[in-house]
Image (tube, rainbow, N blue to C red; front, side, top):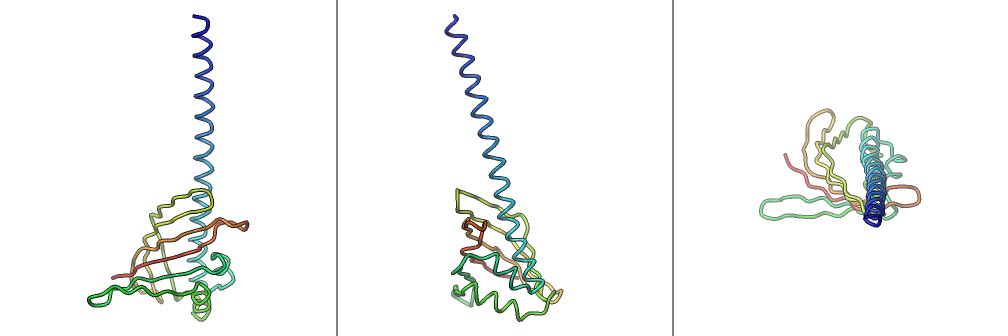
Length: 155
């Protein structure tokens, strides 16, 4: 009986330890998800303000962007460098490009994160289109950065 009591005590302590570690990991993961979501918010803030310095800080070096477009009977995927996108944003009037994401779903494993973000896009205050942004993030020493972005667009 004495051994059974000790064993039960040990198992209870082990369960408490595992539960505490799980809670800690969940809290860390929540903080990481918020950090990833913040990069998305900063990207859209940079777009609406035409701030190329802020926008560049959201992307990893060599980042790639792709857009999926439906044209008549085919689907076309165009590829651009993030650097070209950043240059183009710098040529816009502040306030002219307003992208808004919502209901983001974020998954993280170590230094890799994925975000699925429905969005609406407004040009000069008028609805233009909507779609899904699919982000791939990498955690560099500076923090989370967009390495790859593919998105679609439709009315």
